Image (tube, rainbow, N blue to C red; front, side):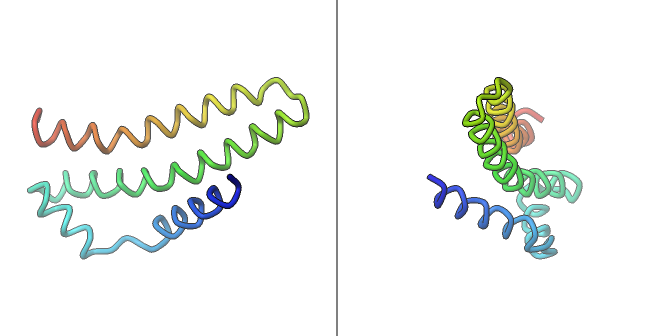
Length: 102
């Protein structure tokens, strides 16, 4: 479990800090048909990868606190999972809204 978490953390950090590519940004602008909408989609996609790191660290902290018998570990685990779900669904919801609803 820890090895998989470390691999996901490394991949997420690499995706975030690989820099903001102008070529990739232009692909989003072309895909969404507008520069402003494409930029928002691009940044939401970067946020999606960044949330994985926060989620993994949150679970590590929650498991550490659970081993120390601290009752706030369950709250931290719930908050980190909630944050993950929100940040993973936000880009999807934005894409659906722009493509079909807006």
